[in-house]
Image (cartoon, rainbow, N blue to C red; front, top):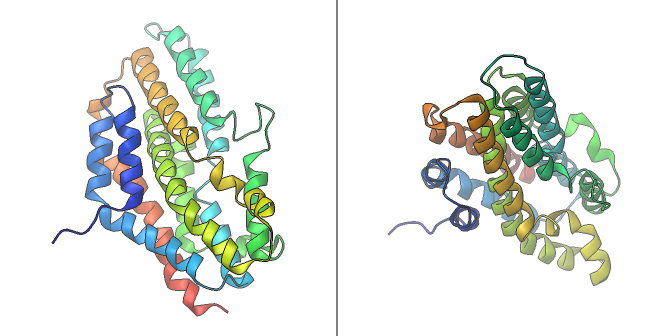
Length: 274
């Protein structure tokens, strides 16, 4: 009997189905199908954390390490900075209007996260949520990072900001955006139930504390994913790059496994903490 598809994978699949045809879609689909064990481990980690009594010590490790896998807006903005350097490149053959379109697509990913549209900075929403579980903001200390979370952050910075080939940055961003859509859709009911069960706050307060999750649900991350796909399309056209020259499935799978490593380590750690 086959194991049921992880819910994160199902949400990802719905996002893939909604995007116009792109050479990225099928490799993404295969990558998520090939890493169902990793997705199941991620789901189990969230289930375990939200089912345990939310003690501050557990929450500090969980929220700090989890946060290192989120908050991609700064990395996306850094990728945009790198594209502007390409716009200053005087080499012949670069299609600068298409490169500008890639930059515009990237900016549409980070608008809401950075509060550029007038909303609350998403890092502040995460801070509000973490403060409820962690009884303050001591969770911000880097001492609460598990090693795999540090490794994830290094992987994202390396692929997004340091790798000389910008395609790696754009492809890791694409994987991040579609994965995050699946994650937030999966975890929102878990966190709602956890807050209702363990915290003496009214429904309005609960909605405010969980706004970081809820604002990313629905079309938000699906649109971020669409913009990431558009950025790749425009960049490839501008720089005359064939996306199929890359091992797309392996690159997308690398993202999933880095994320799963963090959540597996948190699963092992949580029961040992008071």
